[in-house]
Amino acid sequence: MKILISGTTGYIARRLALQLLENKHELVCCVRDLSRIPDEIEDNPLCSFIKVDFLKPESAEIPKDIDAAYYLIHSMSTGSEDFEDLERQCAQNFKNLVEPTDCKQVIYLSGIVNDASLSKHLKSRLQVENTLKSVRYALTTFRAGIIVGSGSASFEIIRDIVEKLPFMITPKWLNTKTQPLAIRDVLNFLAGGLGKEELYNGAFDIYGPEILTYKEMLLQFAEVRGLKRHIVTLPVLTPKLSSYWLYFVTSTSFQLAAALVDSMKVEVIGKPSKINEIIGIKPMDYKTAVDLAFQKTEQNAVISSWKDAVSSGRFKDQLSKHIELPQFGCFTDERQKPVIDENFTLDKIWAIGGKNGWYSFNGLWKIRGYMDKLFGGVGLRRGRTSNTYLEAGDALDFWRVLYASKEEKRLLLFAEMRLPGEAWLEFKIVKGQLHQTAVFRPKGIWGRLYWYSVLPFHAFVFNGMLNALVKNKAPKERNS
Image (cartoon, rainbow, N blue to C red; front, side, top):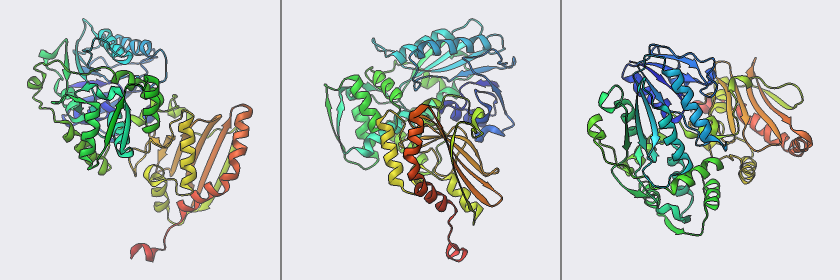
């Protein structure tokens, strides 16, 4: 079948694309920015890519001969106050573009919406579902609750909480019940529902075999990790205080924390149906899902992460517009050093940040991360999805990867920390010299004061990092 996939760079779609390719389907992948095509599918002969922004669909051209389409777009982590209107508009534009094609089925991943009082985001999910309904194609909706998998927002947030806090005083919403579902099962539902006419024009709750409170999920997660944890829930933590608690304890943004707290007050219990029998799936239990997620994490084989969505940080533009360093109205700190071993230096550059740190004065980097978090920024807690691999769009601590090419020996980062201006950091090897360039474009007088206040630290922080990137052991030592 020829299938259209929206949200190609997102957490779900990126993994689903690989599964559909294994089933030998032909894919037409929609991306807002052609510089962000996922490497693992970029050269696949069964994949083609089209540039589409479903909020600005005027120039979009959807192939007429598609057989089915997946709608996998959401705005949960955006800071926009009118995200409900944006989601409805996005769904309407998708529908308008797909209806003139030969598409017979649209598959949509939504949220379980059975509670009497839904959160804003679950209401929006239901609104999107109603918007996507059409007389020109059949809509199949799968409604899921908490998704458990390496790189998922829920998994990473629970991991942050459990691994950092032996004793927790938590909000009362930890007693809310839900039915967590493994990402592997979500993908099997999405792929398995393709072309099944008995699922046309139907909505189906998909969920794991256990009903658990969020508190039980935390404690079971701790058991899998071999950790002993104690949790006390208090009724006095308001939604706003709960959002700040989640924001400061975990790697999530405040916008996503607020959205999650709003949704976590709602019970997410699925309605029984025959969907498991129709598709032939027996969903795994929560502990098994957690264990499998950690296997992927430990193997450094996480395919996608919520943190790599551009909406998880401050950068909202297309990456391709910013792959050259600005020249005017900027302060620049450029340093260079001869490269001893090019492969060593490139590997060190591509491994920077996350658990590996920044190679020089990591304590100062951590302090800067804490300060950023205190002022509402992303901090250092996002880390990186892979320890050794980077591509455009990846989150890297409080940076966003704008350009990454080992062939061109160039890595360009954009700062997503809170700043009175904009900042870039570039690493580039030219004719045996490593060029390390920091560029800052100030905003007003505060921007200029900020630059001069941090300038004294550059001499040892940036010099130390540059030295670490080129310093290599002698061949005799390395081969011993």
